[in-house]
Image 1 (cartoon, rainbow, N blue to C red):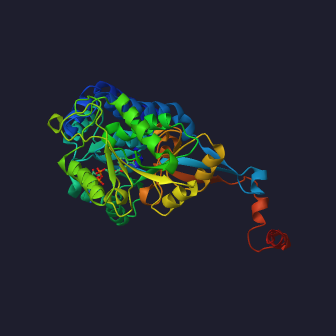
Image 2: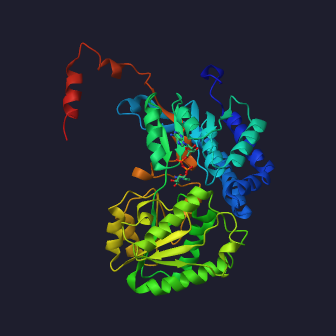
Image 3: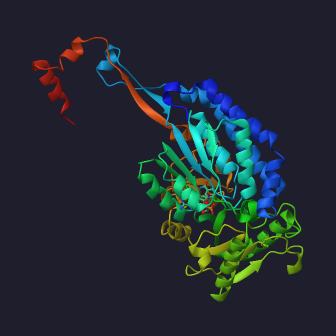
Length: 459
Ligand code: NAD
């Protein structure tokens, strides 16, 4: 690995690395969706191109456009009275050194190359450990990176959780993890051995609140588009939804129409993504069985009246669970699939209270035209991010920080926050060249220094 004695990478070195990352993604634009199809059984190729290539390229372009400005000394206020005599203060953003990146399977390229762009923009080297559940994608990533980067710049380590365990014990300068809350606890414990700072990008149950003033057709189109993208296997997918009690029937109708218009067929639809493997498929079916057994109403959306025999791979029909209760598995665990529990409310504060009684979510969604209600929701809830009148969109805003809070994560990336996460904000102070002002502060202390001190000990 390159040592600091070889110098801190200047802007040209960083831009060269970001350019190579871009060329790499563009060159492999057809291999990436193919690998994802193989890993998922079936994954919508156009969604793969959008989520795992175009969105990543957008982020890199944004970083490239702003990097020079981010790297400049960040001028701060030097304390008085020294500032009056020429003292200066600023922050110098330095690379932290080497960064470990552990990534999950649901958006393998987006969630590995995206963080990598931020790591490289801050002038660091990286070691990445992609997921074992998407072996074709992880192998492809290793090949792509070896063709475009020296191992000293980016090293790729392949393997399962046991490899991840060893990886997380390494003496990195920063460890960036995207995955489950359960594994994050192990990562943080392992990182503690060398006091490695961590960023944890986790999941959880992201709620939707639909206000009385929302247009249900618009809500259904936007919510179901977000929910069903990647078969529901998205960390910021809307997990469950609150609807005013009086609007439940209209909501069911709007959902039926919206899903049928986007996905007239499910099993035979090229743009409907399969569940990643049999374990996750069975986990989701268990949620449905458990909810049914406990008295919930399950509404399955099967617009093309496809038969069980038509099922391809582990595709699961979208469904909605009405009359959910908190003892149901589907309300206890992150769903990560095309199932939407619906809760009704009479007063918006009941929905807010329900959300606030649970772990702080990664994302929160509010739909409505009532600005007072919108402000009330924003001011009385906490989450990593929010989209208003849509879902997921805050993630693709390159100028907004992305991350969770509490059990949904810690730390941020995207945009300048990503650059700062992987930088050491070194505080630099340049002393005034005028010594008489400093001399006052040196022993033997005279009256003037005592007067200055006394004058400052006041409210
Ligand atoms: P996971 O936690 O099971 O695995 C993530 C990565 O950690 C994999 O590379 C895995 O090999 C590795 N790993 C497993 N055990 C490990 C250990 N003991 N030590 C070190 N590494 C280990 O998560 P997953 O199933 O791949 O992904 C799904 C989860 O990720 C969901 O909870 C989802 O919400 C979350 N997620 C979050 C975001 C986000 O940006 N916040 C994005 C996507 C997914």
